[in-house]
Length: 206
Length: 246
Image 1: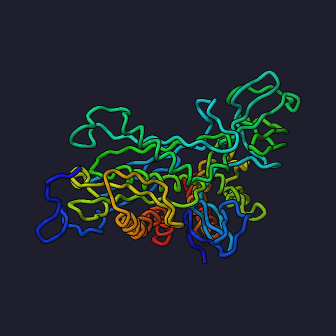
Image 2: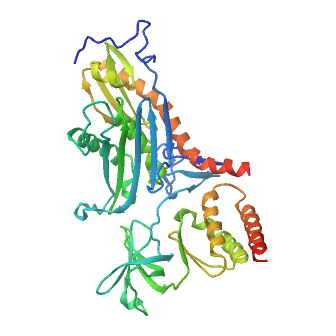
Image 3: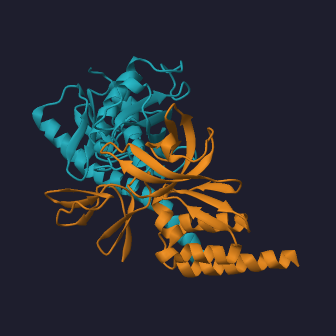
């Protein structure tokens, strides 16, 4: 049974420490953000991105320094990108994909493997919805790609890069996922939505 | 301060018809502002308060950065048109600076600040219309706005004031009872644990009255929390209802 829990609401009688959206004391485990409680798991419905080692993110060059760049990560924290890891020069405002190569205890991150995006569109969504946009083994992304022919690159920080094909429909699909991620039966609903909308697009083309 | 003003009707009810432990009508809505990360509006009797939360974000000014936890900046302010007198000039004053400071301490004990080192969380509380008890209304709104912003909290704080009017303890004072009663005590508590987050005694109360007033607050906090939770859940359940309607 899925229920929405709010901060301070008990989710387990025993203290558990592992959940991101929870805190524990001697009385039990409590939700700390508005979340979806589902069979003992607590899935946050809102939250900021915190850099995690190995994440692929989409960043925007925010500052240029002597030895590299500072990248905005759609997060309270930013990442440093060293010149030595770059094969080309970037300018402020360039959108790049990068991999988080190091994170310390105060969430300062290092980035590597930068790749600049040319053209296309950028969408910002709630970072907590990213797993739902990707789907199990990338199934949701594959569905969107199938119906829209759009190239999608989803950064873990909640930024999505779209290029080619019907980017408008792909963006609408992504936003629909974010709105309805907490409601059961998302996959079927998304397939139906994309089928219907792509039919309309085809009709208009004819 | 004693006053000769009669604050009860002949039938024993208060001037607005309430009983001693009745709250004024309370309505809370979450997510009223689109630009803010979290927001809420509280309409509590004649009080109207909008709260907005921004962050966690980079600290400004930078020297205030705390490498171990997030810092909280709270701003309580009354709009110049919010009441009939006194607040006829915009901008902060001595009273609003004090209330901002006590609000900041409430939220420092409520937010899991250690999760966001080196950042700052901004809480703005704007009183649009006032009729006594605005600081507790503002904190009640800000607590919902914080939860709406997805900031990790230990609990959703509830605030309500208790006071003494014509020698009788009354809950949720309005402006007349506040101004002409003997005492006014805004309480903010964490309903999960019953801990007191804010307690400002204005006037005099006996020991017994203090413990009695705390019990009144604890009872009222259940109703307030119910409204706060309903406001937060409504935001997500409305998407569910729209889905069922299709």
